[in-house]
Length: 441
Ligand code: PMP
Image (cartoon, rainbow, N blue to C red; front, side, top):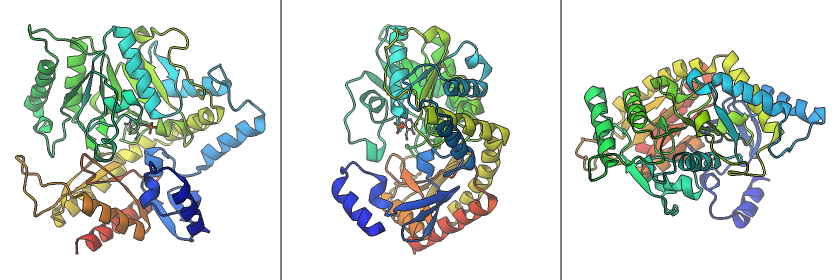
């Protein structure tokens, strides 16, 4: 059955398909962290719908929320009118926001994909400031529509599609393994802030502020790169000083994944605009942008979209958020993530091809390098995407689903659901170690 399905879809689906190229699985059942293929094999899923499934597959809380809506006879699609489900979701969402942002904030429901919420955030900042330019970071990933792509920067597999002609100043992200701006410490952070100020400076010594600065508190597709807290605060300071709205893209980092409900909290940074999607819909499509009241300058219909009122997603989103908060899953992500990271550090000490391990909470990355390669000026070795692909395949052979990321596609990313048990975490690490051993023999 599985082989026939793969063959027919290989022939019919656009070559734009990505996961389907290396995940030769036809999933027919899934529960929690486990996926079962049509061939009867089971897999531990550390991709989690690209970071979407905070509660894993088919969590009873999400399924029950869907069932309740379906059985209630409520309309499933409502454009963007008011519904009880939307009201409940907004209530739950606002309860997670830092008080400074929640006070008088506005939420805008977008077409349900991260990239659309990014578009909304960028255009809103441009409308509110009357300025056009945007500041963004190397290695960023914000989505595949033109504006989001324009503020993305140099992530291997995604860089080949042209962005729009947007006016983007690209700034260095603090990627400590390969970029001196990540060296941290007070001096490093001050230097980064000063560098940003100079890049934005006009020839007369003033600052030409862009319409917005957009950043990920932890870069995901860029290779799981957590920004140091001090650097995030430095970016908050420099943007505040020059009246630049700061947009935090928390599409991947939000909803507890990094050990706090929102990753910006780790640094005590409150953005002016928060972009969220993926996990907020509890597995169904949902995307929002939340912003300070004074940025709410749009005329009705200024950023429209047909699918902004998907009742099921609001209901599963509310139930999921509720479950995460009640069960303190962010704290759980922080403690288990730290333990997993410590185990990955042991692998780094043991395998010369593990150049760097890093992450925050349950967003973990292992950068694979060529130990024989020429070190860069910081002493870091070149990425080894070939080895990364081999490790990903060896993981799949051992029943572990992982995905790659990074500037050169050399980073193995682990994004388990937040409900992962200690036993499952141990099994993930065992299978990963085994795959690493087999790929480097
Ligand atoms: N921003 C970030 C930080 C992301 O990780 C992603 C998706 N990987 C997006 C935006 C785009 O989201 P979507 O794929 O839903 O358009």
